[in-house]
Amino acid sequence: MIEQAAALLRQSSYTVVLTGAGISTPSGIPDFRSSKDGIWEKYDPMYVASLASFRVAPQRVFDWMRPLAITMFNAQPNPAHIALAELEEIGRIQEIITQNIDGLHKKAGSKVIHEIHGSMSTLTCVSCFTQFPAQGHIHPYIDEGLIPACPDCDNILKPDVILFGEQLPIKTWEASTKAINACELLIVVGSSLEVTPVAGLPVHALNHGAHLMIINNDPTYIDSRADLVFNNDVVDILPMIANEFKKSR
Image 1 (cartoon, one colour):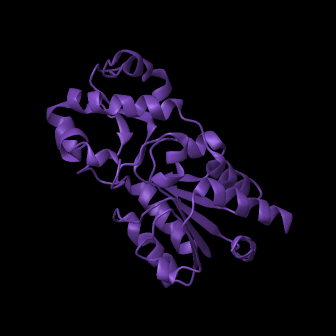
Image 2: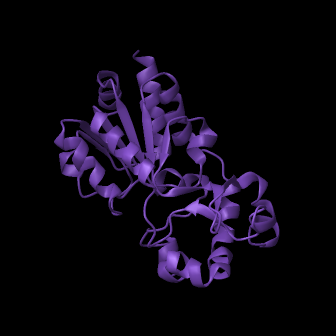
């Protein structure tokens, strides 16, 4: 199967990767939807991570988000992130669509990334809508729990992550669907494909004739239509595929 995966990569002139939480859990980032120890098994997302909650009780949302932010800023890419970055560097992967907000693809060296659920790497003022890099404003929040404030108007700086009840970033969504429509091969990595509208992207790829590869510990709804399915850990499979491809070039 590893050889078949490398062959699919070799045959594709435009490969897109769709990643979910499963690629980042080996880096210590908690999964949100796992039935055993996912974050939403412990917290009500509408209470701690919705746009409505942020509007009426921002302190509650910031207090809940702080341990997660600390974990994400300290996390490092794992071999799966690095394998994707290497495949992009040699021209075998053209774009990455990610549901993750941890920024680990960027840390690994990937360049063309569509962060469809936003990112912790920037903050936007809720009043004047000026956007700032998180690096210059996030440390008092991480270190002391202080809510980030806009240096221009002193209102709250909201992390640019998509909360429940908030629209996906339209430009990112359009770029992602354009990538899906262009791909000859879609590789789903570490996603259970349960969250819409992202869960529908593989169907769009298949409908225009693209091949589909899925690497995820658990089955997904679309496994039966995939060319290859690996129900294995992504940190094992992706480096093996990358090494096999480089060996057979």
